Length: 257
Image (tube, rainbow, N blue to C red; front, side, top):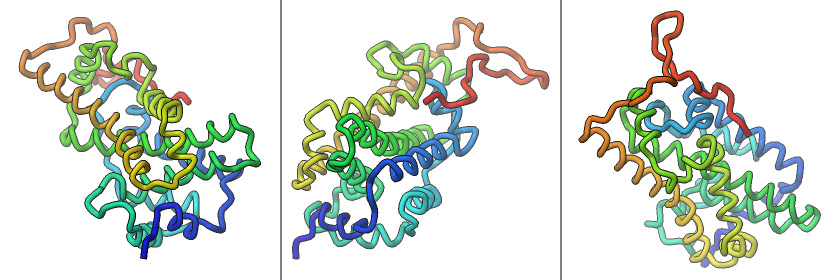
């Protein structure tokens, strides 16, 4: 028996209205995620990468599903396991959070009771969570052992403007940029229709790989930096606190949305 992603999730979430009230819950969830710990705040409120220690765990998944649907993660995973139209070895495309965030965006985009601009704004918020999570997953994978803030500043300063992170204020804006870019391209049709799981898989992989590839390249820059033993040429953005510890002056304590 064939079971598509849309048919599976339509049944799983049949009791939910993807409206303004649901959007507000999604915003609450997203703010909660990017401010969950000081490490999260510092990552999403700055351009630095690699000097923060965190991971994405089952605990985070449970918060996501409980906040939005009042469901347990195992209930969602069990349902998604029955999808037959995405190959089992497509780990990224079959990931439950990836599929659910794309489905939420789909439901917003097809809610005729919402104005067109709201449909897009709400769908973007769903993709923001996808991008926040991907950034945490991949950064913790590449930088298993956090580097010093000094090295993170050096790394940030050596990146050219070809990197999106150099053209936005912080990683929060980077993730939002990726969401908007995705919806500006052909994949908005894939999301709106959600009737072809091959195209859906391509869309999920495309958005995931944009952040993955960015971090691969940034990590490559970091390895080159270590090989040449570069140091910060200007220490104007480093000062000493009352306890004698070096801190970054322009570190953003509160995430800007």
